[in-house]
Length: 282
Ligand code: AMP
Image 1 (cartoon, rainbow, N blue to C red):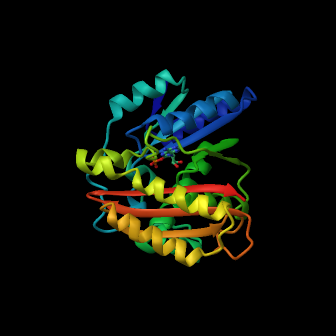
Image 2: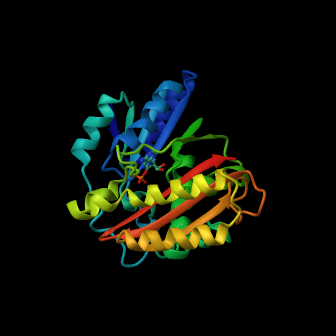
Image 3: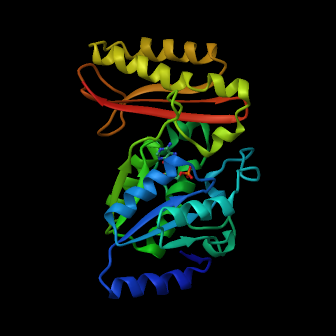
């Protein structure tokens, strides 16, 4: 596996692979890799001639007071995992390389509206940071395929919109959420959970599953289901951010009769902010 820090060096490598007519898959991550990340990488490995993974804790997607400084950085273990997954190149840019003019006075990409809802309403500027860094990566890596997790449903939706609107010649592949045995979605932030909180953490998935079941059984009582979910989440020890039922197609609030739905939830449990969602048809 090649380990590359410089943008120019990565461009040279990609150009060489392009000359050889090889397809390139790209998996952006913030590191502290777990089986969820590995399933994205394995998916890329199975589809593409070359696989590039980035590990970059992107400062512009953290709001003030969030865990940018504390975010778990485990490069040695990550690197080993990526070698095991057969990755061709690990891209490790420095903040200065991606934001040469600093973080305050930098070009940003943003989608108003949906970016300010759900997680965006609780993490100011978060999705502007995500879209900006993905934009940079797409310009540097020029992948044929971009692999993102369905765990971050709103992020996946917004990146798909950006890719379509800015006309990036890349296919976005959403990879299903990888879970622990009790249903908890794997996340780098799960390491923040104490043993006591960890025992309660699967409540988020359970509550979303219960809402899914009610919807599949024919309920259109969206507001009541959301309110009940919030109460249950509180009871389980969370400080809830939201539980919402939305349409898959445009992420607008679901209306009676909608069939392709996604139920999304987020909240803080101790130091960890957990998010999850379930997509389904009915
Ligand atoms: P992160 O390192 O948290 O920025 O995540 C990097 C990528 O891995 C994103 O596309 C996430 O959606 C994806 N991802 C994170 N956790 C999971 C999971 N449990 N299952 C599937 N994909 C995931």
